[in-house]
Length: 152
Image (cartoon, rainbow, N blue to C red; front, side, top):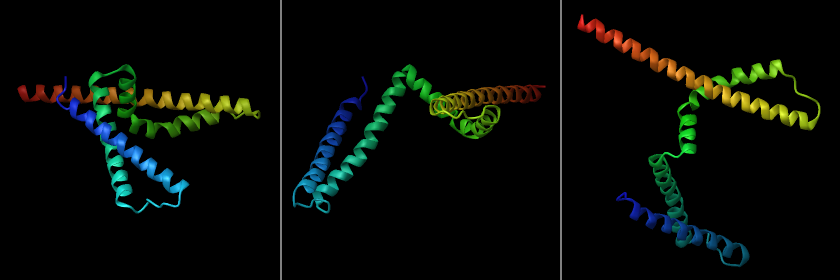
């Protein structure tokens, strides 16, 4: 299917083996008088494991984006709106806290916090999505008007 697919099995296997070696050396050091923390095998296993985990997750993320599963499209939408969520959530959170006072009971407070989180997160995401669409629409209108001026 993909030429890199067969090679990726190798790096996942190497990552898994290096992780086993790394954890095995840690457990052996903890439960015995042997100290592996400064040994070359420990350093190599930690290095291969650290790089392998990063490469493995990048590869898995690439495969998920190619296959475009619904949860991945959802996460991709959150990712593309993350800066807008960051910018708008303080306003929504302040408004929610101003309009709704926290109840005294622990269950009421937990529900208050959960509802606040959902309102702030979904509201910020929606506002960011709408503003992003609005800005792209405005850019498209501006580009069309600029093209029409050049043609006349």
